[in-house]
Each structure stands twice: as structure tokens, then as C-alpha cells.
Length: 308
Image 1 (spheres, rainbow, N blue to C red):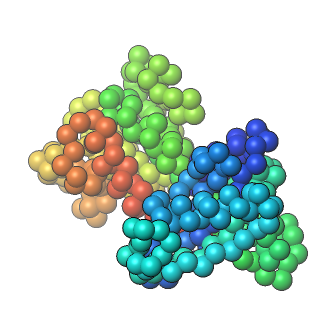
Image 2 (cartoon, rainbow, N blue to C red; image 1 turned 120 degrees about the vertical axis):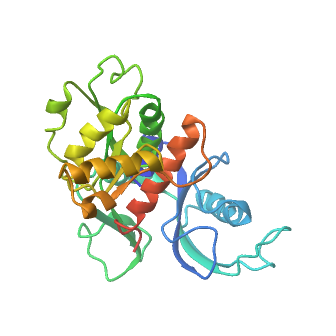
């Protein structure tokens, strides 16, 4: 979520006008959910998405007109076979939404949302103004949304899987920290700006205090022994979700080892996803990273509320 507001804030700083489209309500089957947003520019560029296809093209056309007139607009579209364009839509549902033609003038708000360190609620008032709730007095809101700071993602290991996961996780609104005892890998040469890097002895790294925001853990070290070393500590931390790379056989061996040595209860071991990632027949490193983060997005979606 914050990544989109970072993009809006950067676009607003250029001074170039753009309109913001928001889906404020859906009914039945639709290509996007409530809260979907996109910024539309006069030259046809789009940031975000309203669902693509003819629905997005229709909203883009309305946004273009709103940019020309400076007048906000609302839309209520039924997505049946008669909708809009030659190819039509067969979803059968409907979407309602709002178009703000001067969204580039709200750069301060977008920056606040992009940098939020606590939950903020913003919305669109009855006169089509965008503001934080509590910052204005209004009798009603056309749309409201909570924006949460990024969830933390702790990654144990800085090898090829971590190097593929970290930049993608950043784009997906995770605040990423990578831990490893190999400074030659856990450095800025292999990870993009914004990724926190912790290199040192594992006995020191595993004392890192948990962040205040909800945290996810991913164990992808260079081998079974180091994975088990990290797991001994992390299995007792309050992660929202903890995953570990490996095979089903590896999971069975670690489970047996941990139970025999009294390192963790069966219930705690049940909460560790190993093999981590959704089953998509992944083979390459980028495919593995996608399968892992798809699972983390799925788990996060059940944790944080979205548009309201």
C-alpha cells in the first residue's frame, strides 16, 4: 500500500497534473476489489490499476475528461456483456468509484501516507476533498481507507533466494531486514537501498529485538545446520508467519530433531511452513521467490484491514 503512495508523492513533486481513480464499492464479480486505485496522466500513463481491460479504459477516459474540466466525478458501472467496448465484460458485477482530477495537489497527504509509522485513516469527503480523517470536519465520507506501515520481513540468509526475495518484497510493501554471518554477501552489492543488512555472528544476530510492527520470518540460509540454528531461536518469536526453505524430508528431519531434543513443541513446529511457498511448480530462483512471496501476501491479507 505505501509503495503506491510513494509513487503518488513522487509524481506530485513533478507538478504534472494527474487524476486519481478509486473503486469505492463493488458488488458481485469484478476484476478489482474495493480500494483499487490508479493515477491517470494526460499523456495516457497510468500508475496502479483499476482492473485492466475495458473497465480501466472506461475509467481512464472519464479521468481524462475530469483532468480537462477540473471537475470530480463518480462512476457506477455494470460489468455485463453490453458494457462499454466491443469485447464487453462478462463479470456480471458492478463497480462504483470516484475520480479526483487534482490529485497532484495533494502531495502532502500522499507523502504522509507513504511515510506513516502508525496506522492512518484517510478518505474522500462529500465535496471530493482528500484528507486524513480527524483533520477535517465533515458529515459524511464518500470513501475511507486505513493505511498501515509495512509489515516487517526478516530474512535469515543472504544467498541467491534472499537476493531475489528482498527487492520484490520491498515493492510489495514489506520492510526487509536480511541477516547473515557472511559480510561478503550481506552487503549493498547484492541488495537494493532500503534493505536493512545485519552481518555478524549468528549468536549476536539472533538477539535482534523484534520490530513493533507485525513481522514475518523467512529462513533461507546456506544449509540445513544454519537453518536449524536460526529456527531454534525464531520458532519462539511472535512472527505472524514463519517459513523455511527445504523439502518435506528436511521438514520431517528437523521436526524429529527438535522434538527429541526438546527444542520446540509440536504445536510450535506446526506453525513453521516448510517447504515455504505456494505450489506453483517453481524451479528457477525468480520463480521460487514469487512462490514464497505469494504465500506471504496471502498470510498478510488476512491480518490487515484494507479499504473501508
